Length: 217
Image (cartoon, rainbow, N blue to C red):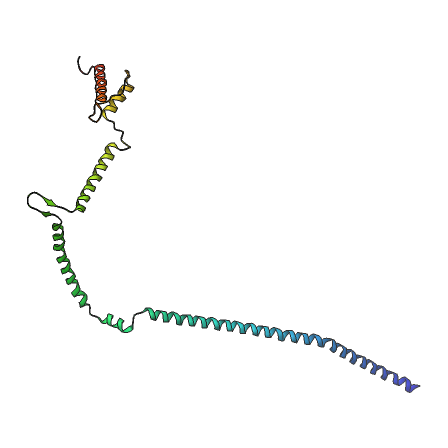
């Protein structure tokens, strides 16, 4: 009986140890899926970051390549527009004496052209025998147009819309219309009128003169 009682504590301690080991194994089994999921997400995140960096690097390289090609194209176009280098060097090294020599020659040409112009003007009017002269129609039209412009200016100043002017007949007719003694309008004799109209006009004018007592009867 004593042996049996002594064996009980040992068996109980072994049971507790076994239970702890089972619990530890169970806990490790529960934590294992979490660790695997974290590792997978970490690798995925790192890979996405690497992909983003790689795409950004490729984009920068493509932009650099485009700029380089554009610069080369611009330089080629600029070279095509420029004159050849040999010609530019010749122009730069050319002496300026040629320009100085050209200036006096140009002045001489101008001096020679002046008498030619005077001769041309003199040839426009050519004198003939007697008191006759010949002139181009163009010159005559210029003078007549200037004369017509002057006449139009005088006409507009004297009889324009802003200036109310009247003939003698209109003035006398207005006086008869507004005066105390009303009467017919005054009409002067005109050569273009018929004989009957002229007689009527003279008769009307004589009647008006008698009323005004301008001429003693």
